[in-house]
Amino acid sequence: MIRDLAEFPGPAQEITADVLAVCSADLGGVIQLCGSLEKREADLLGHYDRPLQITHGYVSAALRTSPTVSVPEVLKQALRRDYDGAIIVSSSKVCRLPRCALIPPCQR
Image 1 (tube, helix red, strand yellow):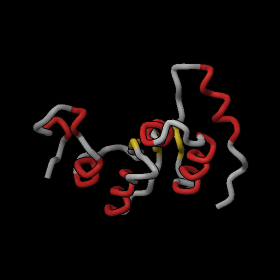
Image 2 (cartoon, rainbow, N blue to C red; image 1 turned 60 degrees about the horizontal axis):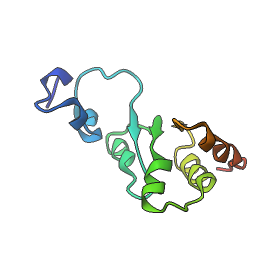
Image 3 (cartoon, rainbow, N blue to C red; image 1 turned 180 degrees about the horizontal axis):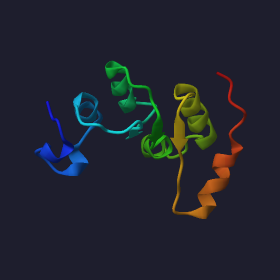
Image 4 (cartoon, rainbow, N blue to C red; image 1 turned 30 degrees about the horizontal axis):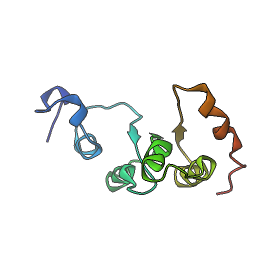
């Protein structure tokens, strides 16, 4: 078991959710993970009784799979999946942001 993330033998970008979940170091109260609706990578935290708190990457993962996917629909599904946490959406292109504003009110 890793007691301090400084002990991790590989590069920082290889620290995955499963490494964080079993790490005995104080990680703070929040873990941010990249996730997708298809692979559900962030579900791993549930195996360690940790809730989804901050997730991101849903839109980019969906667009890699299907370039014509409905962004509002992806965000609606992500919000249903992680209704107690925060979903981060960002873009380096302002022209992409209006499609994020088209999300209808979410019902649990």
